[in-house]
Length: 259
Image (tube, rainbow, N blue to C red; front, top):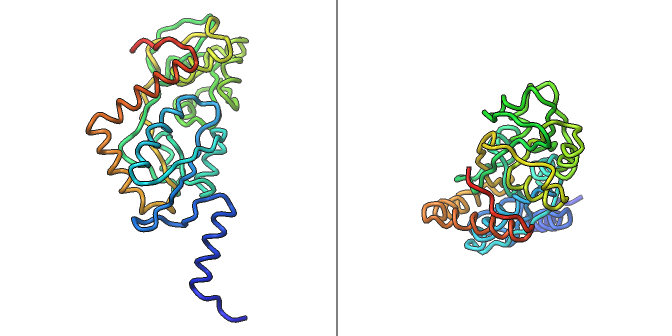
């Protein structure tokens, strides 16, 4: 069989990328940046929308649209690290070490505050060791919760925030570890806000970073330049504050008191 010409091979590669749901470009460059990126957004995690709103603004300045693909927390890392989606909206920095095909973009775009949610229990919160004596529930695939509870003897991982909050309300665990903002919104959604509450202060504040698959490595410095400018001008902080307000209003939750 005759050798296939280079132009035909390139065309086939682009078509294959479209068929299998990825970007139409195997590798982006300033001249061939994708017009649309598909980013994994953790399913049932309200805080992910905050990072999404920030990224919409950042990518628009590069003439790139973003689409969000709702995926369970653990599966999303498989989808993004294998390039079936173009990246992750936001994850902890440790993901960069665990999944070498994913590149963390600097600076961080958001943060979460893992907190101890309880029903009847009360104790003094002093970081992650505070929850070690208790039966603890976490969401499977949420890196900050998995890292914070590593080595603890009585940890139960569930598939979603909804399942986690129902579990602590039913007293099947003593403590549910969840991001304070997302946890409050999920409690409101489930009608459990009068039964389960977060203890103060949070266990930790964790910076979140946007990730791109390595096939878009040439796009990374361009996006980082935009994010650095947004951070320096204060725009990034303003966008986050507005997105938080919008979420609270949407869920009918009063503003959270600062910690």
